[in-house]
Length: 199
Image (cartoon, rainbow, N blue to C red; front, side):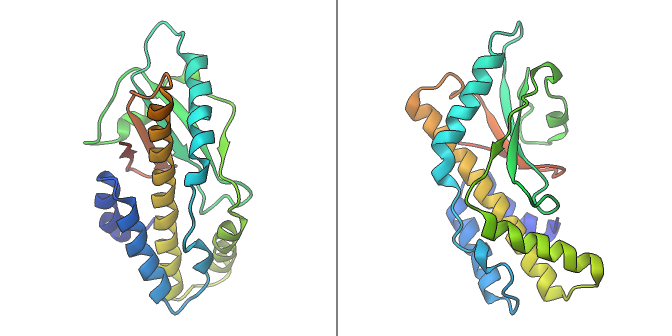
C-alpha cells in the first residue's frame, strides 16, 4: 500500500466523492509512461450494487435473530494485489459502532456470525491480470519507479471503485427498504487501516 497516495485519496472517499477520486487517479494512470494498468481506466463495479444489497440482506436476515442486536456491518475486500483468481467481499457484523476515529475495532467482529459465502466481483479479468503480472515481475527483479507508481495508483482506483460499489448497494438497500438499510456500513480492504462509512 502506498500510504502517500492513500492520504491524497482518502479525504475524497470519506466525503463519498468517488467520482473526483477516480478522476484524479485515472489522470495519474493515464499520464504514466507505463501502460500496464490502462485496463483499470473506466472500470465500474456499481452494476453489481443490486446483487450486493441483496447478498447483505441474506446475511443480515440469517444473523438478525441473535440475542444481541447488530449495530454495524463491515465489508472487506480480499487482498486483491496478492490474490488473482478472484476478488471478493467478506462481511462481518458488530454489536457496536466504533466510528471512524480509528479502525482497530473492526477486528472485534462477532465470531458467531461469520458468513461462509463471499460476494465475488465479476467481469474484471482484464483488470486483475495486470496486478498478477506486476506481482510476478516484482518478485523477479526491481521495478522502475514509474511502474511501481502506476501499480499503486491502480490499487487506489480499485479501492475507490469498491467503496463506490458498497455505497451504491447501501443506497439500493434504502430504496428497497431492506432490513439492514439503516445500519452503519463500512468498507475497506484486508490489512488496510482505513475504512469508509457509506452514505
